[in-house]
Image 1: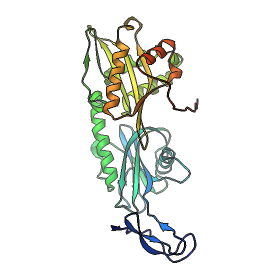
Image 2: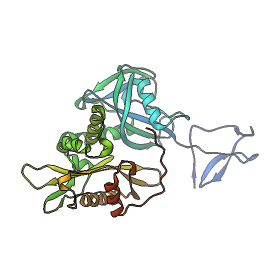
Image 3: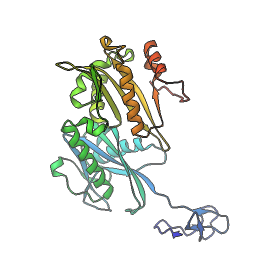
Length: 335
């Protein structure tokens, strides 16, 4: 049995006003009210931290207030009760740096039971500016872009750990080791083609193949650019390609799976898959699907889903033949 010690102790019961005592509850000694039965639980506070990538570096702020007043840290702040973590990250980024931002991906989740000032859970996001002007605000006295080689030592442990992970992934992306970041599967050999994880050098061919999907034929230039950027930057999207055995080699098909993590399970969503018409009915699609299934299993995903709205009759028949059935996922279409 442990005793909970925390600065957030209370003197009187918030329900009935009686003076609080202590009793064992759930394996810990907690403050409790003998009059009405109220138990005071001290839970961690959720917060967000932002890795804003800008001008080849990352944005840091110099703190105005304790803890670590005057030190450089990542922009961060607590989540309000009426907003999501994503909304909080965008709000805090603008308040502290003056930048309007969008989220690239989840960068990590960490906890700081040691404080300061209170026990909390930190949710980090990779972000990029889409407007505004870099300037300090809220509880920051300075805001500045630091290049990798000039990064100071950050005082918060959780900030140091997420920066370390970010630098490792950034190094892999810049070295072209796209597959090392995303997958550990070995290429699958076929007589006429190879199935392998996508690499950065495949980006232009993949974007061109997107147009083979009927739902993508009206994509704007900006939407194509965004797809290219997501392929390069998002570790949550796992892409496999089929590469023809010829010289010069060409990408003849691809499949993309997004990993969706909830509190209790993980699922994979297949939104885009295409094979060049001259290579269809040669087992390329089935081989790509096998690669995705192996990847999903290696990531301990519970199931695979397909966006049926984007599939024509032939694609729907293919998915049915490979074992997909009508599921129980409900969808709210936003646009």
